[in-house]
Amino acid sequence: MEITQFPSTEESFGYPLKKHFHIDPEIINLNSGEYGMTPKCIIDAKIRYYATMEKNTDLFIRYHQTDMIEETRKVVAEYLQADPEGIVFLGDSAEAIHTYLKSICETKGKGILYHDFLSPETKNICHYISEYFGIDTLEIPTSKDLINSSEKILLNLEEYLNEEKIKIVIIEHISRMGFLMPVKEIVQICRKNNILCLVDGSQAFGQIDIHINELNPGKGAFTNVYLDRFLCNELS
Image 1 (cartoon, rainbow, N blue to C red):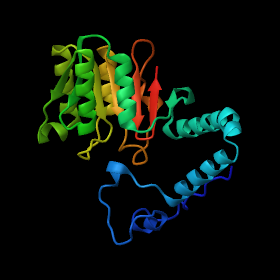
Image 2 (image 1 turned 90 degrees about the vertical axis):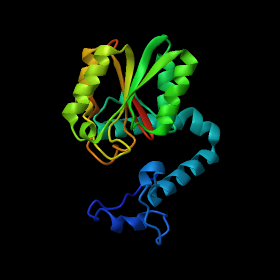
Image 3 (image 1 turned 120 degrees about the horizontal axis):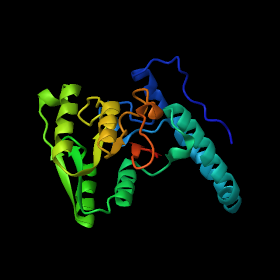
């Protein structure tokens, strides 16, 4: 398979990169984080993969596809500083969150904790899981003072974990409101309380350096899941 040719890393970030996308040159898109925009080189690569598969579908699915997925897992793991064995590709973060919650939320009573600025689609998934399994959901109300202080976010979270029966905490690495969450510290608090932690990394992937292994999610009963729009990374 031909290697995809990406734009030169010497190109300036911002407007000069616009030519590498199919977006209408008359439009300034301020909401690319909601749905994403695919570079031309990636679309071309997808077409080549589809064409290769269609030439001999049986051969491709039986023999080539698995090797290609394994190679891609290694590339993604290196980029995210994660273990390749923990990389799982899914359609999007909503599918990943839904799949994971349905796999672990079987005990009635203990609930799901999240902040009120969590994305609407993730909240809807939590409400469905709550009704399906008969567990509670708890929303942490926030203010400008809280979201502008990592220290206050952590103290507030610990208060809820001390008072409520929580099974899993869901957070966004970069919230849809645009601020960076203290993910590593939140993971540590969850570990201390033997509570699961799910991190939605949809907005973080590609914007900041991500080192999954540095989150130190632990082993055994504790599992940390880092979710991106195009991958679900489960460390256990």
